[in-house]
Length: 492
Image 1 (tube, rainbow, N blue to C red):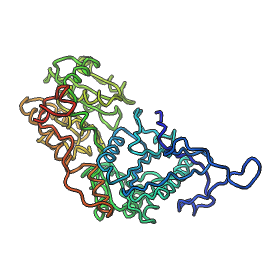
Image 2: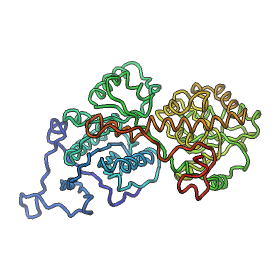
Image 3: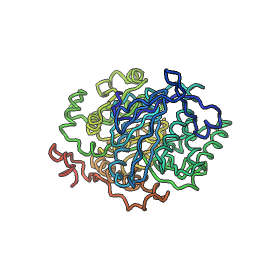
Image 4: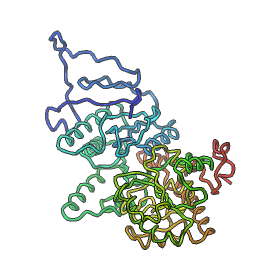
């Protein structure tokens, strides 16, 4: 991923003189002697950009000039950029820009998935781990690197007089150090986490360590920002009930999905050679063991003879793709369609409109933005009972079915029920839009940030949310002209 020139990349290296200084976020300035042998530090190189100063690997840079604005300064500290996080930060910058100066701090440059995305200047991105990935091998050297990186983040927070922080998780020594520093220095710090109560499965000594560590983390925070109810319940076991909690879920670009037209759908069907007139179940996600796509293939094979008009569209790629394809019975090969990894968000939005029922059979899923995408596309939803987003967006018997993870029979029954009656399926799909609208009012991530800053006495309490753009009330797709304003039939 090419980093735009305005993205500030923090890449200083250096060793603290003693551990106490490292723990306190203090690193002595390293002076470089001039070539003439004098003792004065050499001059800093000129800034590559008048606002965004690039840091030399060996030199301590000048601080970026402080803003004279009366806005509150908020830093969101994330492991790495992703399309969903960038979209969330753009919303915060757009909708809270008159009150908040947002800085987007990324500890690594690359995420798990091979997404290609730009870092918009509007979110003020600062990359502290240029060239590094969240998937890099963890060893003692990497742990020490994370610790030092956190020290640079702490110094940056002090230089920029940040008034509140949102840290995303606590699964590294770097994040642990930042959380501890915020607590010691009285900086309001709210932790985002996509943890899910159904994933809290460790036992034995690991359970003991986890309980003590997470209890300390929760005590150190000003509040929690889980994705949904399953996340809130997760932290109750570690003292979370005593902390304020504000939902801050990952979400897709709803406007992009709402604006998808029939022409967009037709182009997607043509590109991926989807047979016209067929009805489809859809899976979207990685092809990895935890997703349990094998149970979906087996369940569809079990009911395929009873539903000759229905196919299965599998959107996504992953390490199990070849194995899963070989699992399909030879007689049903023409009933399966595989797209591979989709990097184009507009193409992904169009693919959702190629089906009627969405399935996510994961054995564990902390959140799952794909459920939000499916609901926005007006699909009925079948999901395993442990999927985080399904706890908010899949209401059993209202807009879909929930089933025990790993149960082929239960999933097959759900597939049969969803496809048995066209009128009932239509009602399920309309109900998905209503359920989504309710969730957007209860679980808006920007509202979560507003509420957290109000809790910290930095902003006034906000009014109730009015989703924008408005959630559709019809399954009709807009025309190309209507799509430009998300109007017409889509909102009737």
